[in-house]
Length: 200
Image (cartoon, rainbow, N blue to C red; front, side, top):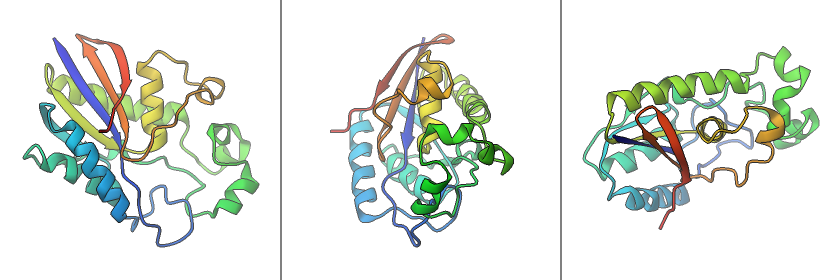
């Protein structure tokens, strides 16, 4: 029995302020984001998707709505798909550069841990719990989970058999694009394949 999980990143968003949004509200899809989400939706239109789950943030919920609409279903919010809880939230690109940069290495800095940042292990734990729960509910079918960059990359690394450490995460290329994602194919309780979604 094959179960397919589509892990999808939200589309491009408008920034009401030049800061890293993370979990801040008010970052909606831009016209390009809506267009790209529509292209992704068309690419998934032929899939027998039974349910769409989304992070509660605007940019993910709006992307999920576009995808779900093509299948005549309503997306369901699942907070486990949220963006990373990060002390970089609300900081400008210049501030982030000063603190160590916008890359996987930031998770290893003492500053990040001291400020209560969510670790890759913590992020993966909630993503894995979410994926396992929903794929078991829809065993034998297909579902779509709409989330954010790092949570998706960590889940793809785990199910693809890669170690969850900075050394290996830094080698993962390319980074999942906005309105892009991965197809994880499960056979029984194993995931023999993790494939990038090809957007037509």
